[in-house]
Image (cartoon, rainbow, N blue to C red; front, top):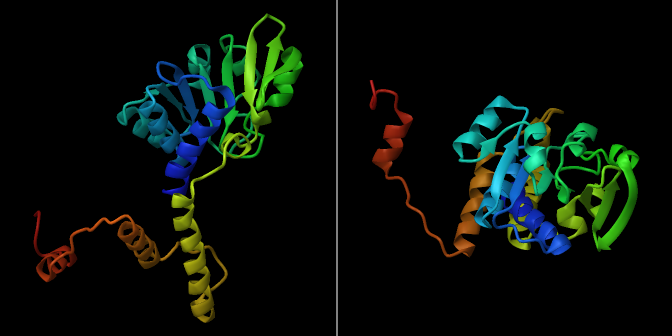
Length: 238
């Protein structure tokens, strides 16, 4: 919710801008995947003035993206109009041969969701008549029909390869969560069985409270009357 949305969202744009120095305002940026990483990237790209398109395979997430104000379509529909295409899915060959065939000349392709498996670089290499390196972190694949497709950071995580990754001000929460969860397991190991556990809600709440305090932000507190009301099923809408 925080690490991926705010950390990946910002650092991915940082990587795109550092690698290309291309103005995002007015460009069409396609976000492949609308999980937390995709949501963060889409919102930050929109904040830079980009026209954001979202592609998805999950109907609920696609509907969320549409109701968040983004255009939603298939990647095959988006590829011909895209200036940037960024994968943030965690799956393989999200951008495949038939997508490369549809891209306009100069399209910039990057990955920020997984290993360098999300972009089918083998297919792109097979389609290319040559590859050049006009800038650090940019490989320009010259296709046989004369178009060029630019791949950033060899398809690896662009926010790490071409930028500095997540800012410390979001990673502090992630590391605090890991530390407190490790402490929780140490304290409660005798009553835990081998399975995956959700992070206890009170740990999330404690970290959020500490973060708010460090930011000088105060929030309201429920009164006892309000607590009783929320815990009751006898009052409210009937």
